[in-house]
Amino acid sequence: MTAITRIALVGCGAIGTSVLELLHGDPALKVVAIVVPAEGVAAAQKVAPDAQVGSAVPATGIDLVVETAGHAAIEEHVLPALARGTPCVVASVGALSATGFAEKLEAAAVAGKTQVQLIPGAIGGIDALAAARIGGLDSVRYTGRKPPQAWKGTPAEQGRNLDTLAQETVIFEGSAREAALLYPKNANVAATVSLAGLGLDRTLVRLIADPATTENVHTVEAEGAFGSFALTMRNKPLAANPKTSALTVYSAVRALRNRVAPLAI
Ligand SMILES: NC(=O)C1=CN([C@@H]2O[C@H](COP(=O)(O)OP(=O)(O)OC[C@H]3O[C@@H](n4cnc5c(N)ncnc54)[C@H](O)[C@@H]3O)[C@@H](O)[C@H]2O)C=CC1
Ligand SMILES: O=C([O-])CC(=O)C(=O)O
Image (cartoon, rainbow, N blue to C red; front, side, top):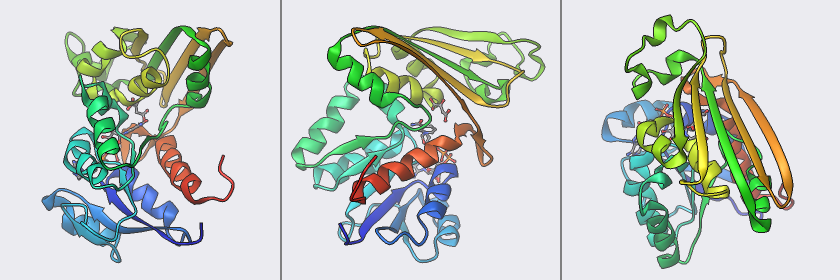
């Protein structure tokens, strides 16, 4: 457990930059490579002058690939890394809502005899939900509440002006599968709750634009043989990207530290 884990970080935006800052000087985890699209290489090199920056994961010298980039990056970088045997940590869990994609990811990990780890990200209670599933779950409901501007560029804009919204408005109600199709950039939490619990079709999702909140509020209510729980997260957004909760960064760093810590929690 003392050797350094050499990380290739895919994506260097709001999450990636904060992860880099928190890992700086870590004795066991070192970001040695950063992978971004060609137009982002110069900017990423400034953020991490010591790392090898490019548009592909280096073929050698990488022990772990960490994705904080978006759905396309999983197809482009995570699948090939898994297939050649490099373990991967993935933040863009919403990508697994696409039909057959979870199976594709699993098949790549099997081919490479390795593992892909999905981080809980912005949501808590995933350990409890996934454990409860083993005993049997009856219902799982997820509600996502965000400030109106966090829903810009989504179907929530149809038929309403998000800039002048006076009261909280339900913008979507349906299955996690439909939510992922209509709101792909906000699908990470719904997908994570679904994968840990009752799946995309049986997980009920409600999305709300609320002018009275400045936070990303996620609520999960689950019932089953274990009993029940209701969890509300009031997450502060990252300054660099208000669509992303700061907790996502901490979740990624926790996952990485747990991979090398003698005592993991
Ligand atoms: N699991 C969770 O709870 C959450 C997951 N996320 C996921 O994390 C992703 C990143 O979030 P932010 O850092 O806030 O976004 P951001 O937009 O600030 O940064 C994205 C970074 O990825 C890079 N990138 C984009 N496409 C790429 C590709 N194909 N290959 C390599 N790099 C690529 C961009 O150049 C940029 O550096 C989101 O797209 C989302 O999928 C975000 C919030 C919560
Ligand atoms: O709160 C966040 O960080 C992002 C979010 O809702 C999601 O991607 O599902």
